[in-house]
Image (tube, rainbow, N blue to C red; front, top):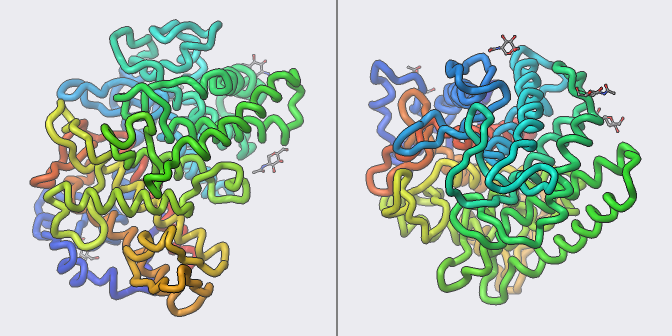
Length: 501
Ligand SMILES: *[C@@H]1O[C@H](CO)[C@@H](O)[C@H](O)[C@H]1NC(C)=O
Ligand SMILES: *[C@@H]1O[C@H](CO)[C@@H](O)[C@H](O)[C@H]1NC(C)=O
Ligand SMILES: *[C@@H]1O[C@H](CO)[C@@H](O)[C@H](O)[C@H]1NC(C)=O
Ligand SMILES: *[C@@H]1O[C@H](CO)[C@@H](O)[C@H](O)[C@H]1NC(C)=O
């Protein structure tokens, strides 16, 4: 993939402005071991795109760049780091999200499959086979017959169970796996490894769907593995998993026992109603990640909310079936307030104008090794960039006028002063203000990517976090999810560039 300059906003991408705005020290880019050119956002994106792919694949068993023979085929390790911290495991959630980045590539290049395409398809199929095995392990969460083992969060890289104390269960893994695998099946590719649709559906998807339908009302640990409760991220991806499953069954006229489909349908209906009331509160005009802790222990602000939104919407007509899309006011407000909080909370953000390094949530104390103080994370910051790109994509492809009201004006005011003295303000599609707004949102998204650029290392390596005082990377090195979330953001940036050219 090649990234061209955004021709319609040449000023912004002009290097001198960047340097003033973000105080970029590009003298480092000329050091001998530098392999990514950090001079401009675009020069960095051009280099980082390939580095991120290579480093992501290095963490997958049987890939072309993997040099770790201990990783079984289809295994996606969270990070190669084995000590300080030890992330040398495969997680159901992280793997299901990472494999999506490969599936996106197939979706984008299905008409012109190249070598990469073929390798990614192979790896996705290995991932599917591997999950068939993981699902059937007896773990501390239970066994396959009862279905309880499906909530097991993590496994060793040789596919043996992890038999130590941990935050169990984590009920976001199975629905994320369902949605990822179904989105691959929808491509109708000819399988390379002897898989077939009925095997995948009956043996892998169906048990996961049953697990979601049976467990959505139950508490489990959140995606950060810290709190046992009901969480927005978990609930929303469960709803998405159920929806994708029901869609697949209906559109392929699968001959299942009616009871199973009815069970999925009623779970979807009930969970949808539950999400719509449980995660909003009259004392906050944003979605609350873990309502049980609101407001005393937690503000409810959490990058998990943004991740939940982007990972349960596919930017197509079916998105109306899942609430809290990326243009929902409660989601837009969430980004506004999280950004505002992090700007004042983390010293490295104090001098930044718009975008900042986003952490997970304000109350975070995990520093990447133990507990002290939270830091900005690459995943959170890339997620903000992706969400903004998707919003822009929606605005320019929907071709609708935009209505700014009291309910969303704080978000739009981040980039454009808007007079809503009448209570609302209509911005006509294609008007000067509309185009300015689109430009400003793209700039805002790009400035989140600039924050990432400024903190990754000179070879393009990306860890988990960057220190809130001095900005250097911390936490697990080469975090698979960091590469995946950056590549997802770059994908949507590229789609906007293509759309506008
Ligand atoms: C880095 O990128 C800048 C801007 O595109 C370019 O002028 C410069 O030549 C590049 N440096 C190297 C070492 O490639
Ligand atoms: C992946 O596995 C296949 C089948 O076991 C093997 O033929 C191939 O060489 C492996 N590829 C890599 C890059 O390890
Ligand atoms: C895949 O096959 C299904 C069922 O035959 C069809 O409805 C769908 O449009 C196909 N999808 C693609 C991407 O070709
Ligand atoms: C589908 O794959 C499974 C597992 O390899 C195999 O047992 C089954 O016979 C296959 N079914 C068809 C219809 O090819």
